[in-house]
Length: 411
Image (tube, rainbow, N blue to C red):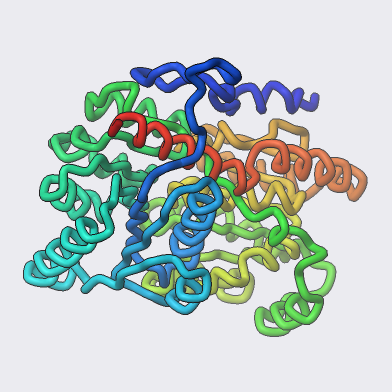
């Protein structure tokens, strides 16, 4: 029986507009004599770990543009600058920092440069888009007195378990991608509830649509990957990298091979050689493709008969699940790291308990047996589900609300 999509939407529904965050002042009723200016009157420094990272770099630029539209003044700092030309074209003030990970001296120089720039530009607060910059942002905050926000993904929260939370307690707001991640962070690090905000990842809906995918791109992939005509394809956009976990899942891939089903695994470039060795060890090279090109992910989803989302890549897994649903592809997923929160419960989706890898083959078989009519019907529901809940614009709006809270705290 198909679950009611509204039930799923209720589960991930965000705080209603106008509801103040815990510890924040209630908004003044509009039209009263004490009505306040709703413009985001703030100078905001968005700290991106690397603008060469397509996802984080694009997010930094999108946030900056939204800040400007709200009457604020955005600034971007990053150790990498692939999007530098776009920042110049959009006239967004930016600063390219030395790589603070290279050496202690590089870290010190980066802190010095950013502190001086923040003071010169009279920055009000910083938003570090990734935990890798938390200590860096903390040091800048101490030297400038600014408030700070930070975004965490699920693997980082897991790494933080049991560690000293002193640095994280210094941040005014912490943004996490699921309520599961929020509860884990609150329990493991003892942070105040008012500090941690849940903002579900959003995607550019215009990109994840088959009308935007070039037929030439599809044909090129089919040729490069030597995909046989009319044979089912399973896509794994977040392949697990742990050898024990991968080897356990490889048993399912072997059964798919016996049924002449091709599996496409997406892995980071630095892990690709290792995964290929594991694939070869299981005799799967003829039916398992290992790729690292993230630009191929959306076209691969278009080719997929079923998408397996493992949950091992944290926020990337969440985004991949949203993309697959936007493309209308049947889903098999493990209930790990908040995936269950953002998956439409349907007869075309299977949510397995996180520890039941042994049921993977049966779940994939069930998914691959769906009829064309069932697939088309699910595609319509899934696309509507994503449009109503995971628009990138909504994610940015939620971040802007957090910026308003920070500005209110500062005032």
